[in-house]
Image (cartoon, rainbow, N blue to C red; front, side):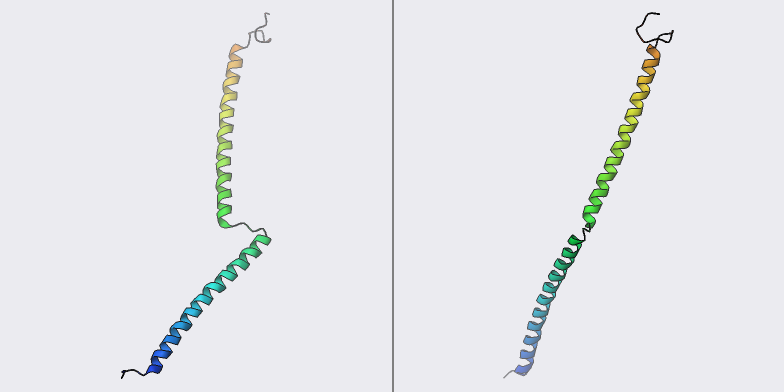
Length: 99
């Protein structure tokens, strides 16, 4: 005969089964809550953090590109001004005009 009564083995089996059921229920409840929250956020047009971070990174890159383009344009305009002033006739007329 067994050292332990059978009732303890049955109770241990029931406790293990109950724990498995509770774990499964917990996962199911979490999935349902997550789905409901995502649905509410979608209806409220709330942006996810990942999407916001990506948008901010794109904006920063665009701003850096714009600043670079502005500095290049300023350099080109400065060079053009110096070329135009160098080629300007002494009499103040149009370049290429005989005065």
